[in-house]
Image 1 (cartoon, one colour):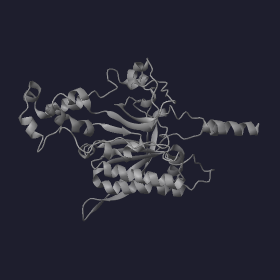
Image 2 (cartoon, rainbow, N blue to C red; image 1 turned 90 degrees about the vertical axis):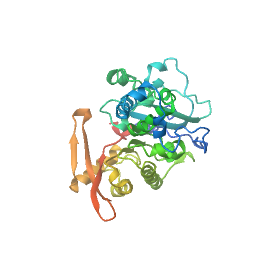
Image 3 (cartoon, rainbow, N blue to C red; image 1 turned 90 degrees about the horizontal axis):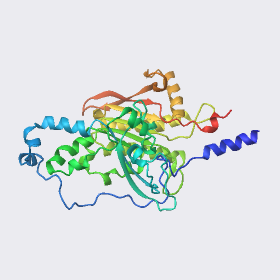
Image 4 (cartoon, one colour; image 1 turned 60 degrees about the horizontal axis):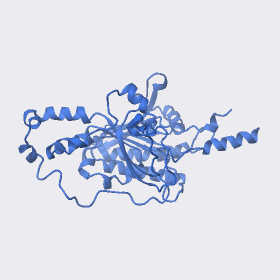
Length: 368
């Protein structure tokens, strides 16, 4: 019986359909990422200023409505949402005639053609996850969000639907493009996209992004070699991602980072919790200092097993702890204080919250 239990644990811990999982790492030896061309054939926003476009604009919408009212209309139509942007190197999805019944035309089966060569695939949609679900529990790319669309977002399209308006005229583009990036929360789960985002988006677009959700799961996988990273390499990669995020988004005011950087850990596993605590929090401290007083709301969500160990240490150290919610919607977090420079002469007390992230409890651990 003991041998059977050991075999079953090993089987359950390895069973995972990476081909169909939106969080599965890119296959090994992926080719170079696509990017913007070095030069553009046409300038969409002429210089020296956007005001020159407005001065020459014609039409009832632009002539009769003041700019403040137009901005409110743009935000209502295209803003105040969570928007997924994702780029992954995977096998192409199989066509499903019923995909129109799923969120953002993503089949609930999400089957992929494993016989075809993998390729870089861009994907974007408006987020329709459950209103109380954490970002790490987002299931929009699995197709299972369709019931959320109907229950909590009736009448709200799964896509932003802004392209037609942007192509209407240059003034429509000039007045709207920054609001799209600045008035939405951008959700990115692809580390490959984050690391090369300067090749995908123009610097002026990155500079307008203020709110982000970043998911860094399965950092132990090393795509370029098709092998596993060591724990030290995992934390080094995490530190690099933290630095990249703070430099790529200079106007970042709000960020949520879900990170899965350690295997399952508990008080019996013998893991060095102090070591993991330093590796997790010190890069976050450095990000806070680089961002200064611009970053107002920062939350770091490590995988659940590591978080529980960190929470125990925080409670013993007398850290500030907050709790809220009821039942499945309950949450708790502790504050990590950081001193940031306000100007050349003074510094101010800031900090960020550490909260529970992805549930990493292995299936074999639930067996009797």
